Image (cartoon, rainbow, N blue to C red):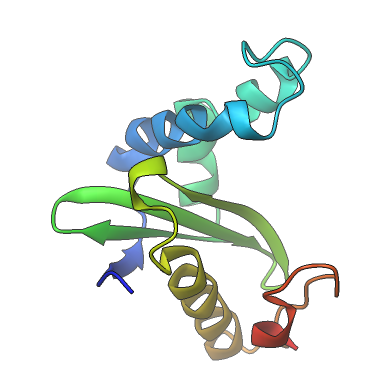
Length: 128
């Protein structure tokens, strides 16, 4: 497992976060060029990410390895997993798990019930 430092995202980090999301979009969009996912890309543009970071309804966390942005996780209203992305070069090192655990801790510390994921996800046991 790669060591990652996790902390709240800062407004000035919206562009790198948006870039990270775009770097992995080809893995979950129907077309590699993003055709048909235009609304998604608008919702992950730097301006939108900045809005999530500054919105008190969101807990937006970044995971860093050294100075590199390795991944992000965002939870809305303390219970809805909104974003979870890990940069390709940092995948398969346990970073998503660490981000999910941090998001869960923040939600609980804020007085929310633990986040639950559908049982189809292998991380379900971390949250319920």
